Image: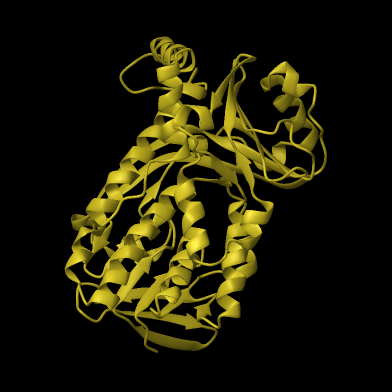
Length: 400
């Protein structure tokens, strides 16, 4: 088989890139190691920056997002029950974010790709990338008892942290930066009305919590838990009881409980791989970087990678200019590190680190530093502006 761009991974970043390329008449084939149903079963965040919203619209798949997505003009940060409001629209000159589930974006993109008759191979096993530094790389994979070879011009590695793409780059050619947090987030999804119209980030003596939402009738809640906890040890009743203890009283009084639709524990880590390209292989999204979810940056950083690569490949095929391909890593990493820093900073400020070993300082001094950060940033307009402008998202990087 032959194509112009081989895309490894049918998550939202791979599907979005494929859809954007198709609009420009650029052919792509997507390979995904699991089934489409499995991809849709992944429950992820749903706070979209304006840059991502604009990309989805440019890709022509925004009809349901624009109809069902909720514009969020702010959010709350609760410290031991005392709430500070971050007014995004007022603090950023009118910018907002959109609440629309990542799973729903993925579903919309899948349906659009299928309707257009674009090639996607689910349950592609033994995917391997070859000759990625040559002018004609190729990919091999298996489906059932058949093996395939896919010839291409470029490869977009959108296959996540555990995928094959990053591992194709020799270890001595890449540098990886990683911080693993000593706790995780226990998340619960339920068909219950959210406690508030906006998200509430909570710091309490019992640990961090987040009251999030997917719609007016579907809620997503999170609790900070030790990495040693197991999902099966948390009944729905135990989750709801603990959440009430961490929410501010006004929110706890409004909490409507119900059966969980999904429950899982996600570890927290910060991770960046440099460079994000090797020959004609480009790493996109989680294949190159991971952020803790505290700053709602994961999907949005992946989208900024897609935006840069989309610009590059469009110029390659429409203007016959391949010199720009060498700039991908430099441009993408500039925004990646801003997102990593903000997510790390928010995580440090809002989580409970008591009882965990913190490099270079004791628990009490670290806690005092973070309390001082919160006091300044939440109680001054300048501080709230910093949080708001980072939260709505920095501008996407451009080739120009």
